[in-house]
Length: 478
Ligand code: NAD
Image (cartoon, rainbow, N blue to C red; front, side, top):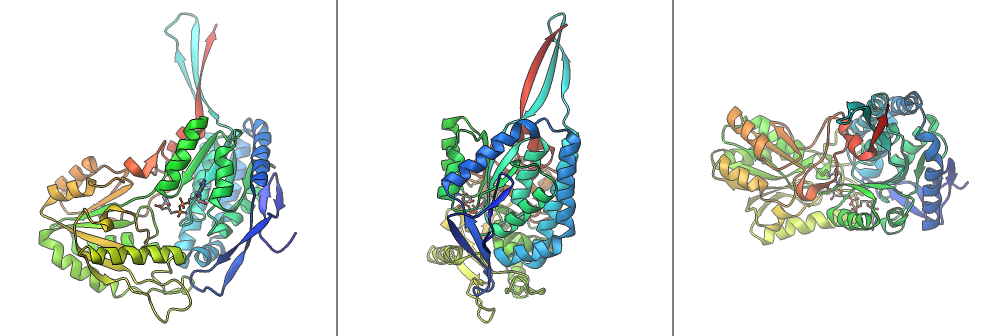
């Protein structure tokens, strides 16, 4: 075997015909590693291995599945410092954020270890005499998992763990940009005792590896997280071939700040939600909808707080905001800042950070004087960029919050129980936050959105079983 990090197919580490070079976005001279890129033939082998492993894994005992997942969870938690550092090095979130993400992945494995023991069914009296009805859940078969670059370990974890807990076999295709964390994760699961073929890793390009997963008749379901355009194209293909599909996609998440908000609470929630993890979160607060009475004080306090944030090398402990993930994303962020300015917005911050080293460093940007029809408020930027929209009152703020094609997360900062209660009920988003950032969620409850942000059953928590199992109804005549 060469020095490249190989694909994992049918229990073997296998080099690919090509490699991708994983570069640290904080230091472009630092090569994290060379990672094999699979071709369609290797993807087919991985799928076949998963299909061959399924008959045995699908009838393994809950104890066997608990043990594998629990051991993997323990290993992730034990190694969260070094894996968190690796994650920060390849993706650019800070070390603290990287360690937090690996810890979360460990907790997810622990949670789904428990779920493997909690798969029950129902016995229902029949409406007909002498008959009993049983309702049970069964695994689907082979599941293709396609993941984005911004949570290189947590998203693969929250797809692999439930898939395995309920008895499925998987083929994971991580983002080409950040394969190192996924590679370590798969190694940990294999070492935790997952039988040969149950977990397979095929790295590489979406158009090759992802495409081969989506087009294979042996794949029963696809769970995808990524952009809207890719997700919709994959979904259409899956519907044609009858695959079950789950999509988690973009956001343009509103954070409403009302006149009666605690200003310090609102500013911290917005700074965190808009700029931490370099704003590269699907749940980032990108539209700050602020009522007239607090608007000017809020904007001034945001600017003051932004000036205290240190942008720099993700691996340096006092960095608050790491680099943008790559040159293409940096270009996209700067394009949106320019377009917002051209459409009449006033930009604070948002420049390249000099003296931070050879990386993709962008200062956080706050764009004021925007209205909700501007592109900056319609389209996902996916960077440390937030815009402010002024609203007359709560009623108008709610209308603006809902005036978007997305519906992942939404927040409100207020001390009014009446407004908080009304907002929770009437904002059209999958997740609602009161006096806390729109990003940052628990690992044991459902995650997902509505409208253009999500499609299909929820991920995470016990709700994950809707996607990863199929219901069987059995009639037994006594
Ligand atoms: P992307 O859509 O470019 O890529 C996602 C994955 O799909 C990658 O693994 C990619 O290689 C693969 N892919 C690309 N083309 C494909 C094809 N033709 N067939 C099959 N697979 C293909 O997204 P990205 O840039 O990696 O991630 C950023 C996006 O992810 C943002 O829009 C963000 O909002 C979204 N995201 C959503 C959530 C959520 O849970 N809602 C979480 C994180 C990120």
